[in-house]
Amino acid sequence: MLEHNGTISLTKVHALMGTYDPPSGTVDDENQTGNIIGAMLQFPTEYTFSVVGKTSDGDSYARDVKALLESILGSDARMETRVVPRGTKFIRVSVKVRVDSASMISSIYEELDAMELTVMKF
Image (cartoon, rainbow, N blue to C red; front, top):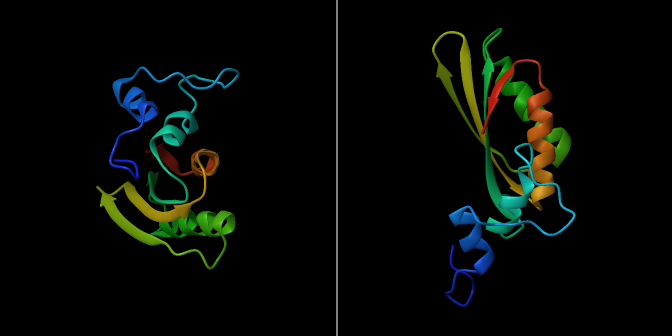
């Protein structure tokens, strides 16, 4: 979290303390993920998307999540995938990928949320 010169940026301190105000004209409500993420991370960066979905037949949900990310990031994107069953009805899928911006993270979360079997994203 230290900047290149060994200090923490004031923006990051405000984000961590819950006192961060996004730039004027920027939407700031409970539906936004990009404002704080943009303040906390330096891009490009590695980011892990985690979703929980209903298991319909085996690990088709995990394949669908991976296919969705490939369609956005490209088939040559490097992905580290971890799949963990959550009982008999749900599965957690975590995928670590390289992202270029906070808006990219937000749009991927929107796409993951739009998947029919997704019940939670974090």
